[in-house]
Image (cartoon, rainbow, N blue to C red; front, side):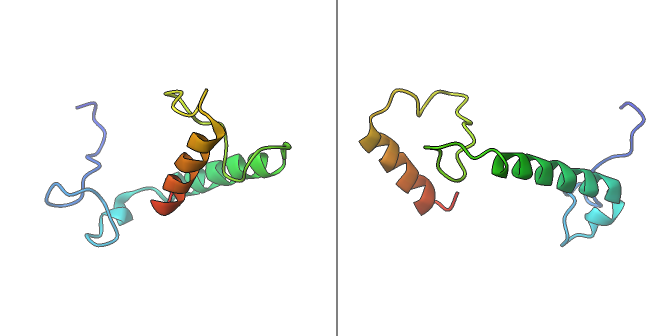
Length: 85
């Protein structure tokens, strides 16, 4: 180990609200995550571009969406909505 405290809660469990492990995590970490997320969202909201759908940030690292027909793209969008993403 590198001398850092173990990130696991008692009993080798991942920290969560249910096992009390979140009390050991520095609140500054949560503030950093919140600020980062708010920044990403505000940048996306302040850059409206015509033809772009809400929530479409262009993240497609495997190129699964590129080059598909409009029918296939619409089918993918409906599958995303049906799965709650």
